[in-house]
Image (cartoon, rainbow over all chains, first blue to last red; front, top):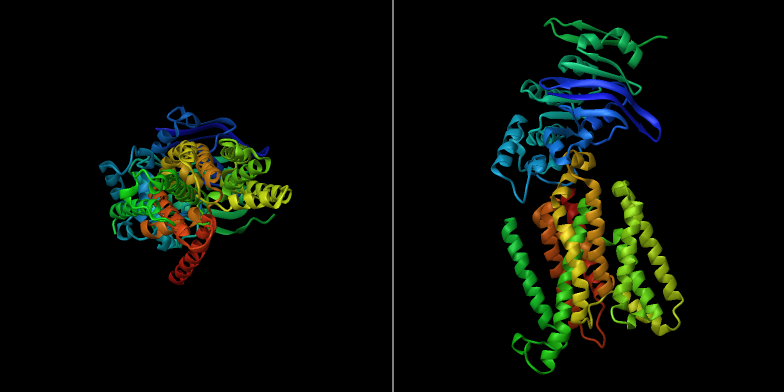
Length: 258
Length: 321
């Protein structure tokens, strides 16, 4: 049960954004894609979600090229939480979560399966309390949970999240990370693009570090988050240590002096 | 009120507005004389019936197109004129009047549909892969160009009568239409509606933005084709048969949104009904205003619609504050 990219390359207006990426993502794991701004993280995620067609190489789900899958079949297996938390109309939280069922819907109205999946997604994200409130009136933290519930409602095997923590306060960031973590533990494949290295260190099972469109390193936290890698990719002087509870933590001292 | 009972109410109002449009006018024609073999019967069959049917269809088509476009562009200010199809169809009609083609059977309708058709093709070419922004810019360019050319044709009209005929037609009216007009326009409108009604679910998905919609398996390219063709055919035919009737497509989805909530798919059918009610009622009113000639429907709609819309905006601002 893997999502695999082989020799994946993508360019926009002849400007290469991704080049020769080889990586494997597994179910039951929370994989975090890291890299500085412009490294190609969101592009990689878009290729995994089937939104972009790579110009070279392939992204495949269980050995089936994602770009060859029927869009609805793909949508049932790969859920995407896009960047920016867009919600354009003041529809209720429940109606928004119900949008996640679109790939499963045939004909008009919702089936019992749809209603069960919506209820489960809302209870998993503790959003039932404001099911009837318009999403535009929710706080940022509440809306982020509702948007995640929308993805869960589709019951995809894979959950891809593009910067799911942007503009959230620390408590809400941890809420979302814990929810993603729980989904991975429940057997889903979770892939998230994150900016915060501290969160990546604390929550990721597997890391993919991109640098200028190329795969710089991948593996466990200890393999990838090394002082040498961080200095080279981010230009920061940082190292891992274990806190008093034995959990890995990252300490960033400052920029690298040249 | 529950959406289902609201829709029943709208259906009832549509029937009432349709009946009013059949009955009301300088001469009131009550149902008992509809089948009569006298002047009343003839007015009913030759004038009232086609006029009421056209009012119903045009209103429905404009309301539906407005709701679809607002959903697609995720912008409550969009209306069927943003695509430039109305302006292009109007240019075709104006050209037909200028060249005298309107005297041929279906000459005016044909030219207006040709204008609409060309603008649809241009739009599809311009906005290929462009998404909504390319789409709206293309529409604006088409609108401006067609408007300028229309003004040019009026300015070179050979005599004041031709100019006034063109301007009169442009202002939009349902006066003196025949059953033949109904039968020519109806297939285009029906096809347009058939393309637009199934877009609801894709419009809902766009609430999450373009990437969100795509990730739900929505084919945005196909959606754009459905919308350009659907709106183009339906609105093109409505302009071809009645001139430009503004405001319905903008205002009706707003009123419906206040009743049904903002989910785009829930607005499509009610907006069609609302458009029909508004157009039929306004068209009945223009017949009742005393005077030697009728107020043009397009003008009446704007005069009725604009203050109403302002009121709505003021109330909205108050509730938002």
